[in-house]
Length: 221
Image 1 (cartoon, rainbow, N blue to C red):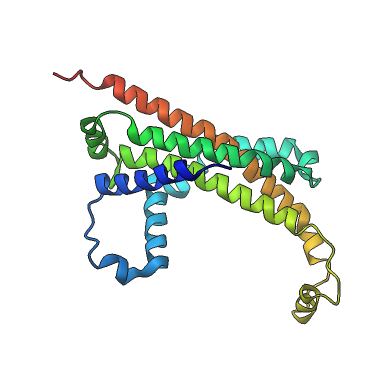
Image 2: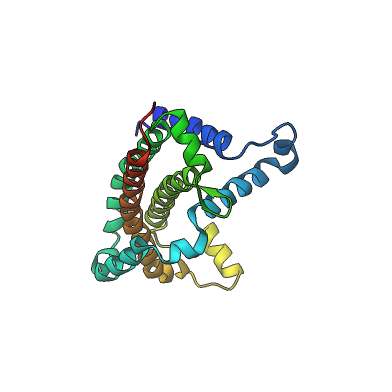
């Protein structure tokens, strides 16, 4: 997986997006909130720009993922789906990062400035909204990939004398607790896998929406 250049472009793009949409005095804010506070703050900004639970709940891609995961129940009831997910998602993640880099470089500075000034909601610009769509795309890829990795890693029988087995017994849990949770874990993991693929279509449509905005822009004098 060769993502070094794409990840560098993504980091630079995030910095550019921050500078364009929200000027911030960084002299003391980073030291005050710390790394966890800064992480929570940027996630909050992403979630607000994306639209929150309201936007997620009415997303046709989310609904389609639920339907497809339900129809494909025989696939996720076996452990083979996690192998497919681990082989597919890294390439899809690279596509998302590259697409975000293209989005950052699209148009001239004046066009990007107008997008940053175009309000799509309370305190959310068109520039931030499209950026949040790509951030959502990347986060879903990472979440689905981590879930598939953990699902395949925990596919073993816990021995009663092992550290995990002793810990489970100490808290009064059954030795086969992991095995009993596998069906639910497989269903959630396969749903995330399908949703992560469908969100790629959402990110593509976001780029097309950007093209329509660019088409409506008057020609430079």
